[in-house]
Length: 198
Image (tube, rainbow, N blue to C red; front, side, top):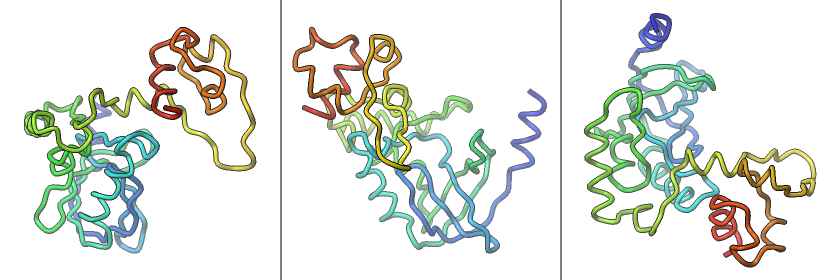
């Protein structure tokens, strides 16, 4: 616990930097002191690029921040080595704005975020962005049922077994064979097939 606090304090700083890459709805790359710094926006979790509203969230982030100067208020470094931070562009708190526009979930689990919870509730009631869907799937659930694929080399076809279905590993070949819910092994598999194959 003491170590975690020390890491967070050691990482805390503020600086201005230009946004040079928008990776997705909650991750940017900025140029600071001639070095590229990957920034993960604090307190939010945007849809993954391959899930509904993922590319919409990225586009909103592009419109708000790409090629602009941003004020970065760092909070910590995550397990992937990304700087976790608040991002302010043109006086706008981008973290809060993404939740307000319905382009991200509030994700303030480690620090109570009543502002973010209120913004999310407002977006849900107004059915903004991802909240226009009947049952939006949170990104942390999506990541469990849709493991990242490696883009190097040709894709190998993987057989889907009962054990794969239990842990949520599916691929596009699964959709071709299964047409009815009774053929599927889990709720996660049904959601995956509905989302990817209709």
